[in-house]
Every structure is written in C-alpha cells, then in structure tokens.
Image 1: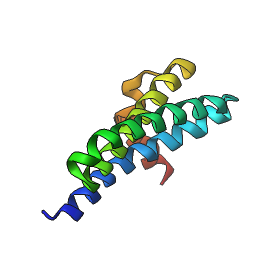
Image 2: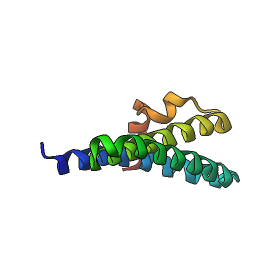
Image 3: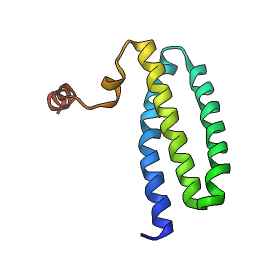
Length: 109
C-alpha cells in the first residue's frame, strides 16, 4: 500500500470517531452544557499537537494522520464518558449497536 493510501485509511478511521463525537456534542449542547464541548476540544487539540510533534518527524504525513485519528478517538471517548455520566446511559449502550436499534429502524421504515 502506498504511503498516500495509508494516511487516507488512518484518517477514514478517525472520521468515524468525529461523527460519533458530533452526535454527542449536539446532545450535550441540547442539554444546556455546550461548554463541555469547548473544554474537550481544547484537550483534544492539545493532545493532537503533542502527538504531531512526536509522530511527524518519525512517520511524516502518516504520522500526522495517526495523531489526528488518536485525538479524534480520545475526543469521542471523553465525550461518551461525560455523556454517560450526565444522561445515565452506559458506555456500552452508547457505543455498541443493539437489536432494539434495528427494531426501531424496522418500525420506522
């Protein structure tokens, strides 16, 4: 696999985390706690800068992609933990797909 393909695949994986993070961010904001998203973004950006400083000299653009993907996953999991505390939902229920989820969409369609 070419180097350009590697960093694209790494970023694609990170995009999944960003998508989940955005859903949780909207829920937290809707619950009147938008400042939590700001704090998590600051921590995630700081982590990204540190990881870029470590990974880019060693791995170039693939290192930058890896640093971004890690910080995206960190942001998602931090939001999932805080969302779980605020909402009372279990982390596994936030992350994993259940049979009842499929039933909902089946009934919706």
